[in-house]
Length: 135
Length: 134
Ligand SMILES: Nc1ncnc2c1ncn2[C@@H]1O[C@H](COP(=O)(O)OP(=O)(O)O)[C@@H](O)[C@H]1O
Ligand SMILES: [Mg+2]
Image (tube, rainbow over all chains, first blue to last red; front, side, top):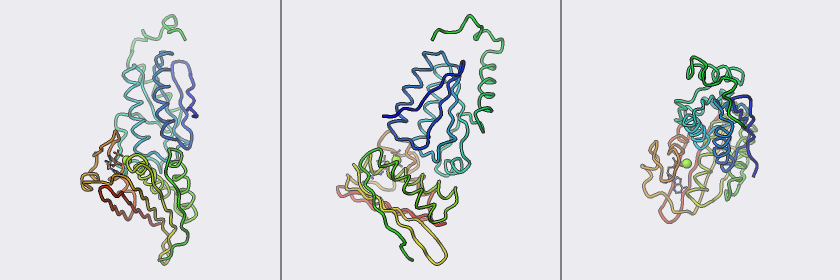
């Protein structure tokens, strides 16, 4: 089975979701991502779904789960790049990604993540150089 | 109303759900659907195809390109010989699931299409027909 690649970028993880997702691939992503958040002590997850041509209730549920799990592991999630037609359809399907933060693109998503982390830790105590968790 | 084409696909595995989405996308493009209409019918197809697999134990989908005067449409007929749905009204309720889903597949699909028809009989199976017009 193919797996969705997870890229480490400093204290963030970048997940770029490909076009046609099989359900089992989506399921595997949840496991892979939680493992990597823990391993790298990641503070944020950027979920780039710009290549996704549709989000149904299964994928929508996965996105909500990922965000909730990340939060428990002390990481923020931002979903970026959702195509307008996908967003319109998602609303009509009756799915609100409620508490999931969204951004137009990866760059803006990164900015949101940085802000969220700064809010968690206004005095910058947590991310001092010598505090980095080992790989 | 004319049926311009009529394809049939099996839905037996996870990969068939993806194949169904791709076929529906291709047919909707051929029918001249705009991006939003394409996305709506593809998303609806994904929901019902997954139900056919998960709850119906697999089945088939027929994809028909329709023309009615100057109108163009796409009709999808999903059929399985699974356990059927005992309480259809309940299954159509937003948030109702007997699995671990969000319970939005049926109710949401109805909102995404112009015509929605559900036939089901316990012990015999389920047939769901959805149509979206351009
Ligand atoms: N083809 C089918 N055969 C039998 N039961 C079905 C079928 N499709 C849907 N159902 C029933 O209807 C319920 C609601 O379906 P749906 O709205 O797609 O939500 P979900 O898939 O999240 O459970 C399912 O949980 C299942 O009990
Ligand atoms: Mg469903």
